[in-house]
Length: 166
Image 1 (tube, one colour):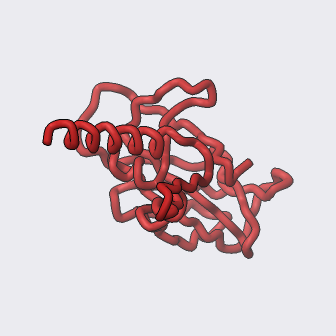
Image 2 (image 1 turned 30 degrees about the vertical axis):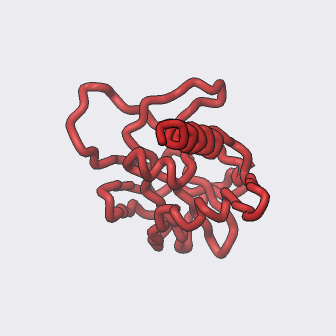
């Protein structure tokens, strides 16, 4: 019975390592009789996005369910050409990824572009659009996280470019 347990444990460890270390957008595993699509599996585990309608041209604050608070300044949003957007309503979709389990489920990896591991207290994904077109928050905002416990380690904002962004 021990060899079966050991074999199963090694198989599970190997599969887990392969799934979590893979940085491709999609992987299909085939064990001979069943096909398993990794991207489809993770889609069902993702944290839901919260949607906010942010009036442009004035300061505005949003407070998300997990404690993330973002204060947008009047000149926060820019269009694809870099022009400041002064009017309209920007649709902001915010996904809070605050615990290690959320990071795994959302396939968020805290590494730099040089593949150095970051120590993370959480992450947020922010997607902003105006009339269906992407707009960009260019530093004219304050971002605060609610953390589980106090920390003496200062946190800094790390901007990550995802494959969907590039």
